[in-house]
Image (tube, rainbow, N blue to C red):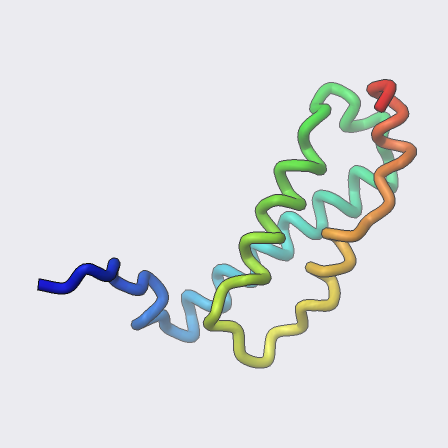
Length: 89
């Protein structure tokens, strides 16, 4: 009997990797939309935080191959000053 947990990414397929990347890009696109029009998202104070946390988890996954992580990392590091000002942060 093994004490280690199974690796959930051990048998990941190329299609699943593509699906994960596309979902991450959905978060990137949403973050960019919020930054472009903060007022449109003023009813959801946590929208950026939730999506940045999602991207932080995703970029750390061990199965990436040649996917471009540049937009994911840029979205993680985005300047949220104007959005935060809507909430007095």
